[in-house]
Length: 431
Image (cartoon, rainbow, N blue to C red; front, top):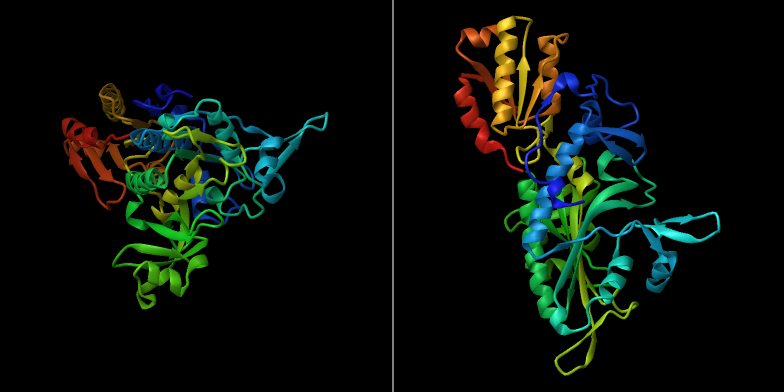
């Protein structure tokens, strides 16, 4: 997977050529709004509980989310890799997680040899790095990937929010001192805030203090507030500081300078997390470095995760209405949805001309050129698909002097010329 595959413009599309179709009825085996809308819109296809395939529209959204994350990881010095899905049993036994990790998928071949299907990659990235670094001059190092993961999730019931197979960005940083790690960790906190703002949910997402387990006093989750969330957090709305319910006690509240009476309970979805791993995974593999005096020290580590499918599902969960999805411009599958209404030849000619001209200008456009679909069905589909702008060409709009343009979030549109349409759409195309 090279960056060339995920950057640049995405091609326009005629809806008559799109093999997927929208559905009026909701899937009977889904209870979450994100899965319902994504399936009805033809963005994803459910294979089984917790396992989904991305269809053309959904893949466009996923790639845009991926691009945003990749750009932000590169800015902090991340080096992208793609690690193996099959992981040696020996590595997991060294860290003690072969038996301890209860949701680990274990696969055996016909000869009885066992491997793990990667749910995370500490057991792979550390041995890789050990082959290439040994001096304090080699650090810090930051490695990330965007890859399918597998976890034996027994409660796969929340659509894209809780999957058995899912796509995750996992980054691992390696440091020679606590000071260097803490500096980078703080930088990653800001980077994550930037990512969630860029995908359109920054105003609803809070860095949340959570248990650090055996690693540190705290880890940090990024929680997006929504009534459909499975987590419970307590938010101080004046400071923007949040605490996960599992770590809510007087000591934590006081250490953060908060007052219990100011904390408001919310349900939320965890869209990302960052951890101080210390030497938990470097020590079993003897990942170490020699300092200026030649003395040996164990490398310090941090890890930083974002589930792309979960993030996509969260956007749908919190940015939709009773008509369908409302995609932010930054990750929408297209910038504009062009609708041609009626069978008037002049309408067809004008709509096709607009489609060709906007396509040449690099505007990502979905053209509903279907001739057998009523105007009402086209409007309904446009609302469901949730593309930021809807441009309608009809006999009425042409009589009024142009194209009826409406934002997905607006009730009424306005008539604009083709030149005005281009000026409005060109700045909105962000990847």
